[in-house]
Length: 507
Ligand SMILES: Nc1ncnc2c1ncn2[C@@H]1O[C@H](COP(=O)(O)OP(=O)(O)OP(=O)(O)O)[C@@H](O)[C@H]1O
Image 1: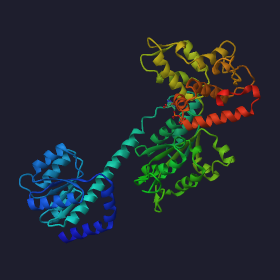
Image 2: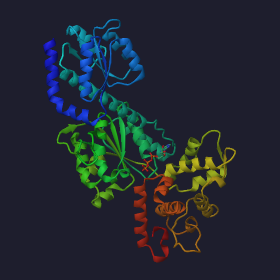
Image 3: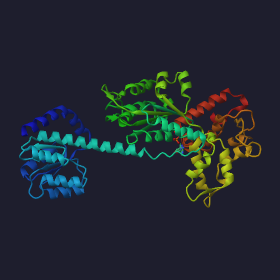
Image 4: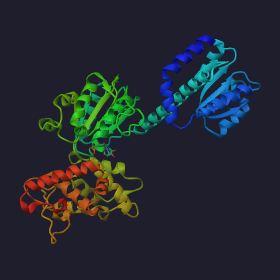
């Protein structure tokens, strides 16, 4: 037994010696609790480990060990099996009961299989038969410490994953939403990729979560990534992970979201923003589950269900050469199109009631106004307006005064002449005489363009934030990059407009 144990330790030691040395040098010094009643062995062992740069606390019995464990945290405990009073095994049992986070190595005098097996059953991560070389002891301590780090990382990842999984409640009884809910039920049980299309704020992520929760992978990880929220160069390492040293700043290896989601679901939001150069890599993982971390040659295989979302017209992006056609067909096996809020009859009131805290009330005329507004920012915008109103209003009653000017003005223009949203809106040139942007919305033209409503709203918010794009993006509930893109688009549109229809805020 002794021989087997030593050979095993040596083999592991030589295999990973180099790696452990690296860890030992780069991380905080390993903290070891050495519980050993033989004073000579304890002292020489502690001195040797300290010389190696580890922090060692040596005690002679289990009671002292428990006192130390009460006061400090340790990475690794080295417990002698046979000690007067409480044995090493009993000490191990005790710390197991108390949920102390420490990896334990048992030192056995006799080296019998039985004692080693009982120690492992009680949660020890390794054992060594005495007498043992200090080199072997160091090696098993380093392995134990690595195990502790991995456990910690695993816990953290699980915490991240569960935090990302709040209950997804889909409110909506309109015909349009009932159709969506039926589709969710249909697509959920398959493992096929799903593409969710819809304007910003229509609930694409909520629908993705509902699909995951109704699928057989509901108890497996659900991880999300928003391609628009990350700089291009980070998207790859977030999705696929990286090796240590793969790029400047990659100080440690890191698993990607595909590995974290292995066995579960990944939700790729704003997939239309995925850099073209990365698209073949996503295609591969969709085709056969194979992928490589950035900077690593080793191929890994994962099984992950992909749900993607976009608020762009992906088919048009394919036409424009911004999105690969083969990837488009791969992710578009099952697709769902979310209707904008203005097309969900009856849902605005339901959503107001859902997001309005008790005991708040909304005056009837406020509901009328909110039902007429076209909601370019969809449900997200409606939630913001409701929350804003509850901050401004008194006596738990929301009145017209508590709504933003752009919403009131919009409805004022239509209330007595048009029963539904106006047929056209556009922005006039901004001159010293012209009133605020929201007042420049001109109604009654032959066509209704939602883009123009969005432009007025976005520019108004930007103006209110004194041109500060970061805070305007926060106010709008969109990412800064999205705001830049919108401004770019508005600017292009403005170039195409007759000269009198430009927006000076863009300049
Ligand atoms: N059917 C719904 N019922 C209740 N709340 C909803 C519903 N759909 C969306 N929401 C809420 O609206 C907000 C926006 O939803 P979500 O983030 O899913 O939209 P999105 O389409 O993914 O937006 P983006 O394209 O900007 O990422 C969230 O707060 C979400 O909880």
